[in-house]
Image (tube, rainbow, N blue to C red; front, side):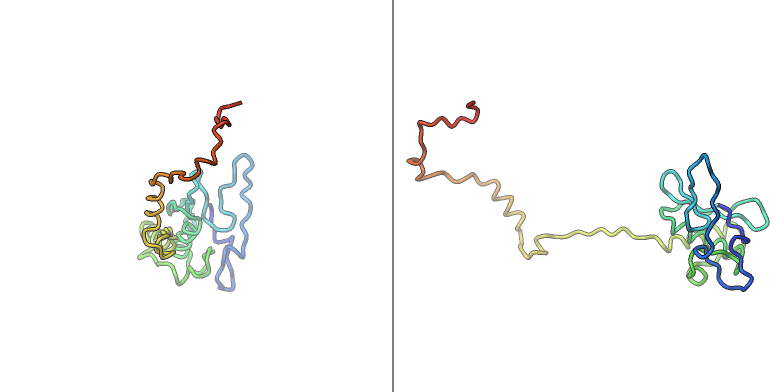
Length: 176
């Protein structure tokens, strides 16, 4: 989960993107790899949610940025935090993060965490619920109700077919 500046730094001052600088393998042999294959600072929990944390520059401590339903949201939170901590030398997950994401009020960890949460919430994918009214769609008002009404009508009587039935033949269902 380490996002050190040396992994992604550029001496030319151009924007550094994680997609252009692939991550090194973690080297885990006994445990399953949980880090995201592309996004920096993002890893997957067993519950299927994505978490994000960033190492503070020149320290061993980390700043916890939260748990998110998608990897993209966690990656956006990461971008807010590394921009606040490292400035132009930050390695970002998305090229538009510089101008699109909120800036923390100060360099205080609480302000960074708050801005990271706000930045991630900007990219919530809304659930689309679609309801189709078949009667309106096919312009058949009360079509379903009339079909149900038809099921409750008794079947018609067989009038005029009495002479066609041969009573000498046993038509029992259970006759073997």
